[in-house]
Image (cartoon, rainbow, N blue to C red; front, side, top):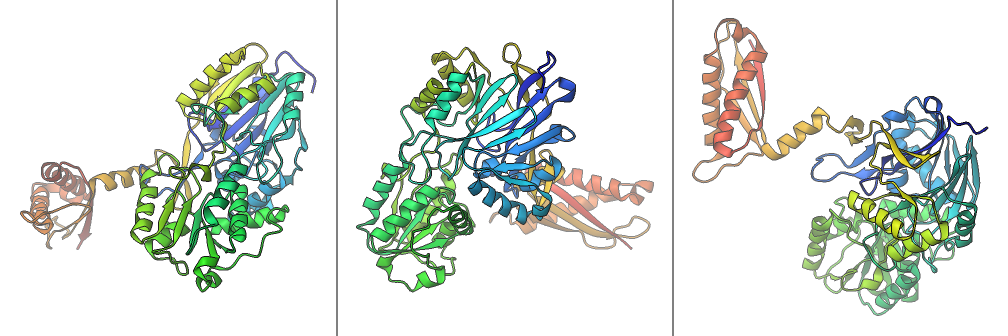
Length: 557
């Protein structure tokens, strides 16, 4: 494309800035009225107690709808980078580009969403290139806690961007190649306009550590254990799975996979030649009758997820796996912030069964992070030498601290955008030039709904305040012709005042509220419902210090 003074190169995060997870980044080139875009990653984050009934949250792509999107380039296969494709691709339709391991898992995701046949999914070899209009994208091999992690060198007529994705520096990654340092240095020599970089561990001094060291630590731990052994780790970490499997085999144990994700990831790994020389896995049924000293379960659920394998084992509801006194459970993973309570409950239940627990707190060598600490960030900046640092993948405090570190590394310019901030990278000084609509969409009951949707508001309100259901019959003249029944959901009573007595009192108040209505008001069911609701909410405030949802059902006779 011929360079024009009206052309701009912009970066627009719609997810993953001011938060960890839910990555959706857009790069635009051209004049403001006719930009061409590529997207990098389309990921999810997960619900929490503030979003009852919502397990998955995705970025809002509204701004991109109707824009010219040349392609969607995926850096790696973690859910916070590809997990929203099944939900959002129909709204941002464009060809997908991914390396083989990532492409395998994307196919499964698109198949689950029943859109696989509609999507153009292009497999790119490691180190491969993709030409998308003014964007020439080269995959750069990095290391991370998943197979085939990639940075992207995005070359444009106005400069080159290094988009790191998630990464760390690991000279012994166990699975896959080491970081392509020479490729990054060449980019630095040629000139990197901007580096858009992972900020997750910016507050942690030193380096993240090597999967090779974890391999040794896990083997040393497992070799002397007697009884059944279960290991919980992130299924996506193929290197960790490889280390656990080989440690088990060295200790004379066979491995059984527990959890759907374990089966899916191992299938993806084998499809690209990984885990090719390990012994066949036992089924859970076979493992049930295997000698205790000769079995190891590789399980999902290290974060306490209620439906995952480890939680079902802890609850005693797993159909095939039982752990008890004399058995062992190794948590080869970190505690993700927000999961402390669920993990603690899981571990307490395991301990109550007599299971011996091993975590990174008492055995630090059994887990390392997949994200760069400060020494690794310094190393990356010394290789790439960007003109502009754009921290991403972090909370606000992470991005601001990352910008300070970049300045210490003599990076001339830094920008710390929030989701929705459009950053002009060229021409001229880097700056936030616009703010576009951004936000979150909730996957609620299999539907995409707005973050401020009425259903979730009501559910939150009901969760904290309870529900009252009032039902009665009225004749055509507006006379109550049945008993008024009031039922409470999520509302307490005690010995001095049982809930039944409270509800009877509320029924009397409801009847009084209706009897105060006159004339045409009695013919309007909405007016009657509002009168009952006002009275019962006021009474509830006095009784429980809360205002429940009041649902009134009137039967006209």
